[in-house]
Image (cartoon, rainbow, N blue to C red; front, side, top):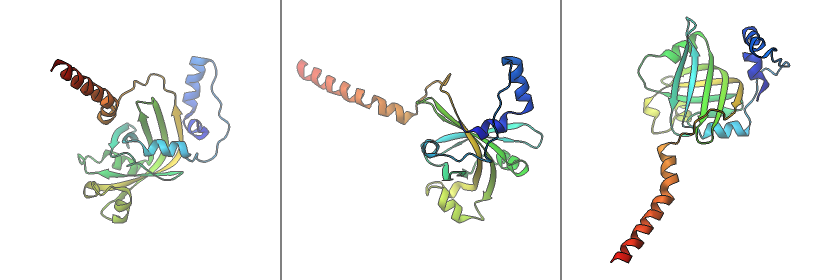
Length: 199
């Protein structure tokens, strides 16, 4: 676990709750200004085809939004910067508007089959795709460039890996297809053998 993550989130109210339920508050030694991503985090991010992003509205309400794309659509630009293309959607502009007023974001990335999750804290900024075709070319695949309206950048503060407890494994259609392919092949072989025996 990167120490800056907990140092950022362990507010006085959190310490008070820890004391109430566990008798003492966890103390975190002073941490560096930010925790850069390592090779393990970069590889995990590159394999994801979706994540959730939380922003905070001007009236203080949290807002959670799903983002999806081909694996690797969330780019690790460098150890402290992420970027992704934002596609045409329902035109509500909630995340974009929230970030304009408060740039704090939290990203939540899941690997259900392996029961792993990575949480990221950072500050986001949004660039208009119409004004930055070079960013669209860099961060949007050719198949989605026409529907890319914005490019989001996230300057990382820190990250945290969670334990696998209570994560129910789930699988994509492609993962299920890959898992059952050998079984289907074997069934076809046995059916052919059975057919030859009966003829």
